[in-house]
Length: 355
Image (cartoon, rainbow, N blue to C red):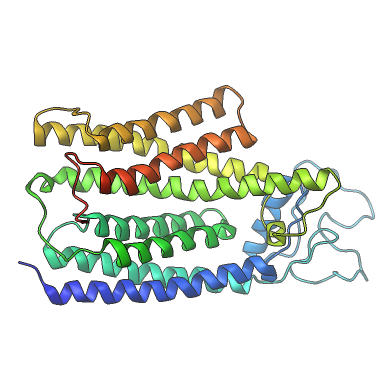
C-alpha cells in the first residue's frame, strides 16, 4: 500500500532542497571569487595547510615551526612587527596575503548545505516510508539517495578537514543529479521487486552509496588538481594564466592530489565490500555468486581500475598527472556503471524503472 501523501511530501522536500542547494552553490562560488583567503599558487603545501587551519580557527598567528630556534629580539613566528600594516589584525599571515577574520561566504555556504542536506534527507526518508521499504528501488531513488550520501560524506569530512574549497564542485554535481532525477528519471513510488526484498539490499547498497560518494569527491579534487597543475606549469614558464583566477584560492596541485588519493583510498575497501556483499546476495537470490551480469562485470571493472590506481600510487611512485588520469578513468567507470549500465543494459539488475 503506497502512501501518496508521503510521496508528495517527499517531492516537496526534494524541491525545497534543490532551492537551498542553489543558494549554497552561489555562496560557495562567492567564496571562491575572493571572499576567502587568497592562497598563492606557488606557496608550499605545508604553508597552505597551516593557513587554512588558521582561517578555520579564526587565528591570527602562524604557528612556529617545530624545533625552530627563537631569535633574541626578533618577533615570534607569524607575529607582525610593531607598526607594520598588519600588526594586531586578526587573520594576518605571511607578507603579500590578506586573510579576512572570517570567510563569511564559506560559512553561509556550509550552513545552507546543512539545511539542504536536512531537507534532502527528509525527502529520501519520506519516499521510503511512503512505500514501507528502503528508498532505492529504482533509478530515481538511487539518484536522490546517492546525492544525499555525497552531501553527507562531504559535510562529515568538513568536521575533520577544511575542504570548503571543494564545496562548489560537490554541491554543483549534487544539484545536477537532483535535476536529472526529477526531469528524466522520476518514477512513482511503488513496491520492491521480489528479488530486492532482502536485508542485503540495505547492506550492499548503503556501502556502495558511501564508496561512490567518496569517489565523487575524490574526482572533484582530481579535476582541480589537473587544472592547478597546468596553471603552476604556466606560471613557472613565465606565462601566468589570466583566466580562472579563483584557482589562486585553492591549494597547490600536490595537496589536491594527496586529498584525492586519501579519499579514494578510503573508498576502495568500501567498494571491495560492495562487490563481496553483492556476490553473497546474488547467491541467495539466484543460486550463484557470479552471473556475469553487466552490473557485476562493471562493478568489478571499477574495482580493478581503482586497485591499479592505488597500487601505482603507493608502490610505483606514480603521482601528479599520471595518478590523476588513472583516478579519472576509475570515476568514468563509476559514471558508466551508474548512468549507462543501469538504464540501457538488460540483465538481472535492470531495476531502473525508466522507459
